[in-house]
Structures are given as structure tokens and as C-alpha cells.
Image (tube, rainbow, N blue to C red; front, top):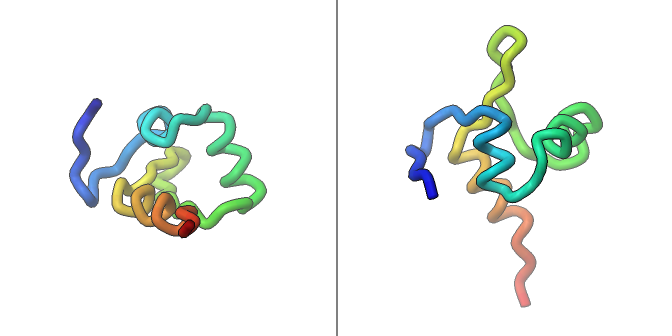
Length: 64
């Protein structure tokens, strides 16, 4: 598995691989604003800050 730095910007392909889902799912979430997964827009490029992905995972965690 690849190691990422906290403020490193990931491509949608890298983010989807880390989250275990397709890039299309991430695109749908961005379009529909379904989940609060922040992303960075640089021109036409979309990037995900690794720390935002980790925060998203924490926010989705359900306590037993």
C-alpha cells in the first residue's frame, strides 16, 4: 500500500483506490454533494487532500 502525507493531494484514482471504490462513485458524490468529502479544484483538475479523506472516514465511523 502506498504511504501518503497528510496534506498531499491525491488524484481521484488514488483516492478511490484508498477508499476501495470506483472513481465514478467519487464523481457522482461530487456532482450530487451526497457526502461531505472535501476536494480541491485546480482548473479542471480535482484533487483530494489525504487529511480530508481520513476525516471523511472518521465521520463515517459508527460506534458499536
